[in-house]
Image 1 (tube, rainbow, N blue to C red):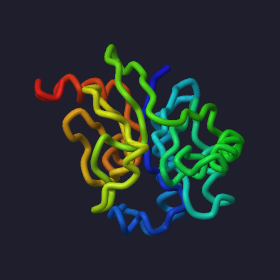
Image 2: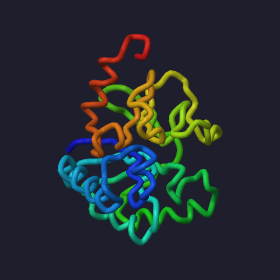
Image 3: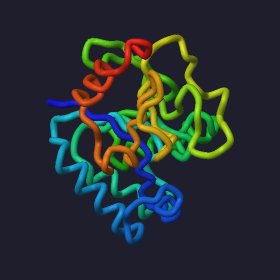
Length: 194
């Protein structure tokens, strides 16, 4: 049983191809490639932590793709997920839709967990930085108290910045990244980041 991390699939989102320079001919090509890539590395008994923004576009087209992804899937909703707690109570009422689509669990907000032998935070949002020129969602960002943070949201902007590691598909060949790879990245970081 292995553990993986990923974020920012944006299944069904045609415009993300241009926004992030994704190498796909269309949204169908993008969706299919990410399902194939996921299932090529993730086994049925593996766990995948999805750090938000999994599906956009028409729900009836994008949400069924979640059911095609193997493994135990845990969603930490992002700002584009309809069930993100930042959208208020009506969003929390939509959690069941994501569970019905194929997620096994949904965890809201920044969550502490152990990666390798180190406690880290996982959250869709980074401590600082954004996918746009404006820093959004300030009140929902985790507080930087010196822990490593695994996140999404910034797409192609960076893979690592200090103690922040972007697990988004745009930096990991549109494939979930293995826990062992994250551990190695942390261990090989400059001492000031540790």
